[in-house]
Image (cartoon, rainbow, N blue to C red; front, side):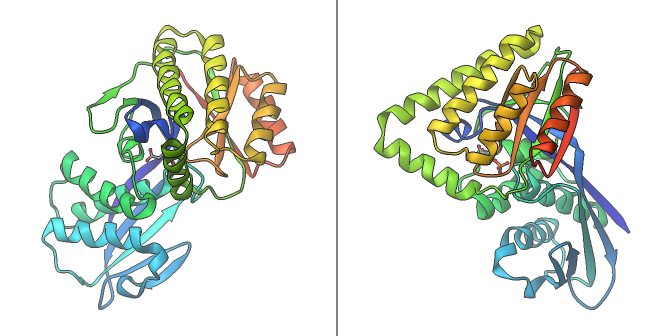
Amino acid sequence: MVVGMASGKIILMGEHAVVYGQPAIAMPFSAVGIRATVTQEGQALSVSCAFYQGLVHEMPKIWESLKHAIRFSLYRIGAPTDPAIHIDIDSTIPAERGMGSSAAVAVAIARALFAFYQKELTDQELWDIVQSSEKIAHGNPSGVDAATTSGKQPVFFIKDKTIQPLEINVDAYLVVGDSGKTGHTLEAVKDVALLCQRNQEAKRWIEELGKLTRSAKELLSSGQTNILGQIMNQDHSLLQKLTVSDDILDQMVIVAREHGALGAKLTGGGRGGCMIALAENQRQAQDIAQALEDAGARQTWIQYLGE
Ligand code: PMV
């Protein structure tokens, strides 16, 4: 029996703009994660997870990206295409909520299968496997999910460039609120692309998002949480203009701000999924989390941002 693990991720700044070459700041979110366990079992390649149990070759089309992560890993390993093994997937990452569950499942599967066959998994190999399965799930992934669900530290990420580890010297807390509604990253990314084709102003919003992310990088390093909060608010307004927020996320952002958040915004693909709020201290973070739950959040988490 061999295990592969991956964590969820949170995008602090830069979602959507990152698809257009602007930077994003994202971090592994270890409060949620995925464990893939491989065992020598049965007559053919099979899988079990919350939504499917059975043979991999009979998996419904909607789980194509998961199937691809398994098949592509086996191909890169040089293993038989239909080995007599079973992969059990156990996840605490809510699916389709902007927490990187599709990338994380590919990371966990690749790690477990390579370990099972005692093959070294290079960073490049892991990247190829995760990105190719993310293409099936999201169409045009920037790679920020692949970078963070497989990593251990926050990153300053620019598509097709190097992934820089990010220094965070902030004595503050992040509250993550799950709206309970599934997000629609694929459609949101497509709609932003259409908007940019039709509306010159949308391109400027993308650039402004990039500038905000660069400012956030400096503020995270210098620990200026008040201004960081304001930057997060501005970021949310621009994401609203790009049409990737929705009424529930907007309401949650308002609730967080009314309960003392220094700033709040959606996180991830949007149109459902999760939002984040910046809190000055633990007590305030707990108040915000409670207020979000009272307002209907499915689940909340609190993460300390300092080292
Ligand atoms: O898949 P999600 O919802 O965690 O968000 C992905 C972030 C986007 O910027 C919207 C898309 C991308 O590929 O970077």
